[in-house]
Length: 81
Image 1: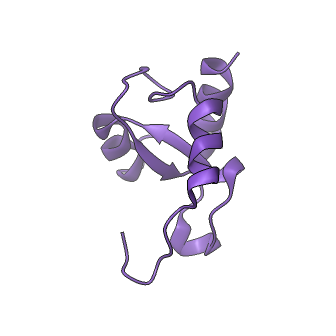
Image 2: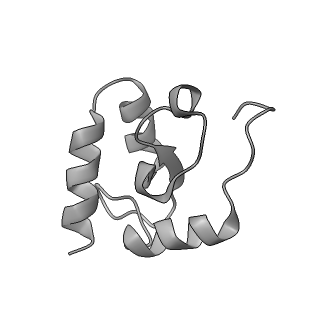
Image 3: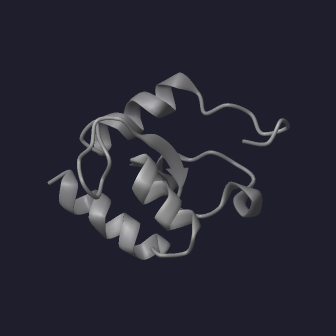
């Protein structure tokens, strides 16, 4: 994380965790990282709808451009329904 990027506020983190089912939206692993679906460097803000939870492995795949934002959004919806 960049030193000039503000931290994600705790209430926002809570909402993201609840929406994502308290685990990686792809595999459900309970150890996760917060991931901006649209890159923070581009949007320059935190937003609940733009943040999802990914385990380390899926986070590395996503940042390696293996997943597109739309796919993550659909997976988030599937995990939370």
